[in-house]
Structure formats: C-alpha cells, structure tokens
Image 1 (cartoon, helix red, strand yellow):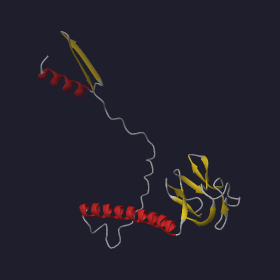
Image 2 (cartoon, rainbow, N blue to C red; image 1 turned 90 degrees about the vertical axis):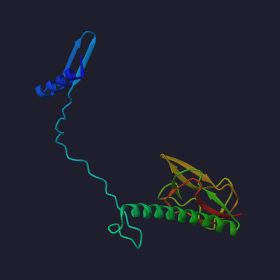
Image 3 (tube, rainbow, N blue to C red; image 1 turned 180 degrees about the vertical axis):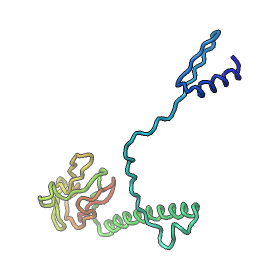
Image 4 (cartoon, rainbow, N blue to C red; image 1 turned 60 degrees about the vertical axis):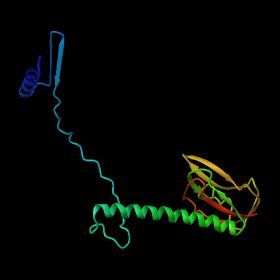
Length: 177
C-alpha cells in the first residue's frame, strides 16, 4: 500500500462518515479512526473566579504597555516582599534591642491566644511565664499544637493577633528574661 492509497482511504472514510476503518493486506495493517466532536452537554458554565487587583500607585493599567505592566508587577512584588521582610526584621531587631527573647512559630498555621473563643487567653502582656507554660495554640491541618514559652520571664509584647495565619519562624511573643 502506498501513500496515495492511504490518502484515498482517509478521504473515503471521512466522506462516508465512518467512525472507524481497519484494513489488513499482505502483513500490512492500517486502522483509521475519526473522532467527531460531540456537542457539549447542556450544563451551566462554571463560574469564573473573581480576581481583584489594584494598580501600582501612579500608574494606570490602561495606559501602560504589556512589557511595562510586567515590569511594574515585578517591581511591586519585589517591594512587597522586601517590605514584609523589613517589617519582620524590624520586629526581631526591636526585640533584640529591648533584650527580649522572641518566641517564634515552629510551624505554619493559624495562631490562637486561647483554647476556645469563650476561654481566657493563655497569657496576657505583663504575665509571668515559665519555660513549660503554654502561651498559644497554632492550628495546622486541623491539629492543635500547643506552643510553650521556652524561657522564664515576663510577656511584654504580642506580635500576632488572634486568628491570624502565621509562617514558620514568625515572631509570636516577646519575653523579657
């Protein structure tokens, strides 16, 4: 079978509307399958997610070209990353300047000051803690992890609000030793 015969067979299969055609001659086997697109099922289209973004101050997304917008987005991301790093650095620097021991988050999760919304917080500013005192709970994957003070001293600063997500190594409390 040569190329012309194969092309003729393909045309014949498509003209006749055959879904599948198979031929075997002298040890040569050819199978032609036609996949027709089926009409889409009558379902409501999925809702598209709402994406809210704000342009970088002093610029307009409509007046900037695509390469400029990419550059602006990269600069905005870089400045946002550096400012959050600077803020975290400032809190740890401030803690070091005040001779504070910083209790940092050992895991990623959600910070809770109390065991339940109706309970009193584990510690408040001004409380004295021992090294085994539970100061907060961090929820990770539906598991409540008690965080201990690690040192004895007085709680003088809280870096995180109740219910706020925390990252690994993020400062939680400042303890004056």
